[in-house]
Length: 345
Image (tube, rainbow, N blue to C red; front, side, top):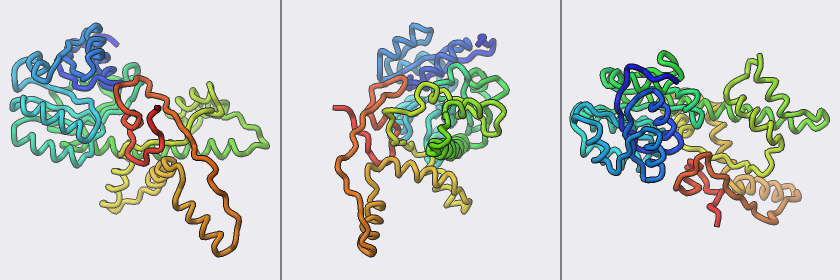
């Protein structure tokens, strides 16, 4: 990436695998970034790469210049953490300043927060961000909600973070719209992942053909109507281990699928694929399905059929995320459902 002549300054709170890589991409683009994180080691590492490190919210804001001209991006977990950081920031900011929420907050929370901050003259911009650990290299897709004037002030930063200045980002509408579009994006992602998973399981079960899953995934990447970046990543994973040995079938859900389904019910719009894909994640989170046990008992009761018993519960470990942080297993998984996977002793 080449540095841009239209540079800007911004604060970043939360320097984990997403926030940290976003800072790196912005630095490569020539922007001035002041960063804050609870992990001093992460701050020091990015400071060595050109970021200005801050040791408190007050220090970060003081480094960003005149009140009313400052912009701070929060890249922290949705929910209580976002609310806590937001309250700390807002208490020290001035009319005209901008707070950006780049996490996966519920759009209804975003609308409420934007209204509360608007009364104080502070802009609240929601940026639904997609790109994961590949964003540093490929750029981030960003769905932006908020006042047009505030979004326009952030344009130099958004153009640098995006795959290209004129691609991969845009203002969706008023506050909350960015997080809403990102919510639906993630719901669609659930459905796509489920469809791929079911198709590959079906082919693997056809043992008389001895199908090579890695070969098929690689073949489908070229010319097929179902090719996608998701399939690219799947093909890469299968090249190293087609049996997926040692990997649990537990699949976490981090909330967006649930919110998408709730919104579909409220609007009366059918979303059967997204709904079923989310329900399948719930099933994966159960070590035993009580509903399945009930079915087995009922079948024996009316028909006298044989049933299976549980001889031993499964034991599972945890492979940490690609850039482990000082968080629990549940936080790393982004869990909102059953807690089947436990922290290692």
